Image 1 (cartoon, rainbow, N blue to C red):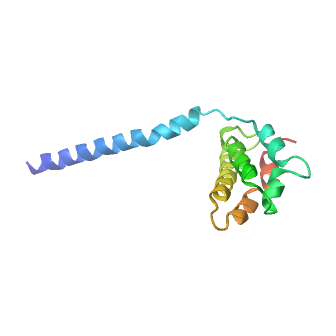
Image 2: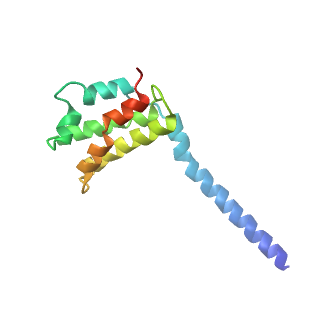
Image 3: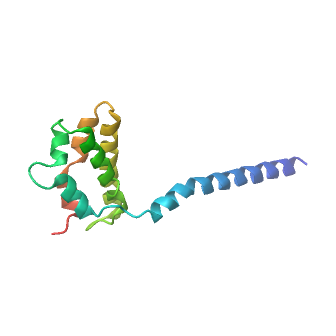
Length: 132
């Protein structure tokens, strides 16, 4: 009798774990199916091209709410794009950090500007992922 109770407990625990794993995987499947709104080239052109660009305004502390919203909108596409060159894991980590930093700016979190300045390290990303 005691052995059955343990078996039932294991069965119930396993069922709950499987159900939770199924629910948790739905956002991951949706993310895998998600298509980026912008290409990497479009993101770079819209936010980083030229001497007077949105990323520069923001790093200097003079970015407007609209500019920060645009950062978040465009950066959301980067993790969904394939890296032009290099490792996908590195690409995802760098682009996700950039998106989170922009989201923190929009949310007005403390030290968000410092976090954005660290995440927007062009050389680090270009060295690993920009085609020659």
